[in-house]
Image 1 (cartoon, rainbow, N blue to C red):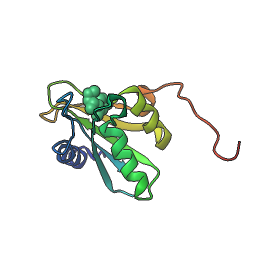
Image 2: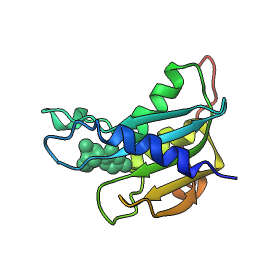
Image 3: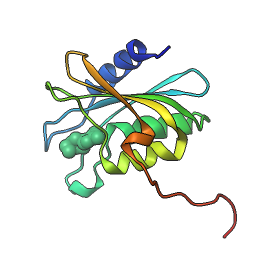
Image 4: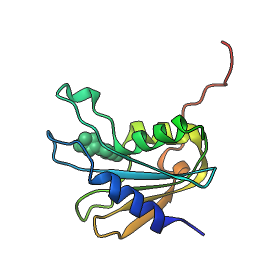
Length: 133
Ligand code: THU
């Protein structure tokens, strides 16, 4: 069973808060944590463009700040008929906290989605052993 409906509602709500005055490309994302809670994020842009942070990463960081470290499912929604996929940087961040089999729903504004997995989006990911170096 997936949690697409709740994730879509969370992502849409966050998307309405997107700060995207430069691109006007508003994105909402939501992740389901291992604890069963849904965390949402929107993209936050900056006049120094490289400081922009995507909706997906903001959702994951909200989850971590709440004390949860496992992403069970992900949904991303934009404002067009594009099935919005996470960017490469967000794939790496998702892979830090999700199993390769975790579902990722990439959605059009109207809520139609294409679904895949974190592992399919980022095979051969970069990992480090945790602990002292
Ligand atoms: N963006 C996201 O929020 N998520 C993605 O996966 C792709 C891009 C945002 C960043 C920027 O604010 C705008 O979309 C245009 O790149």
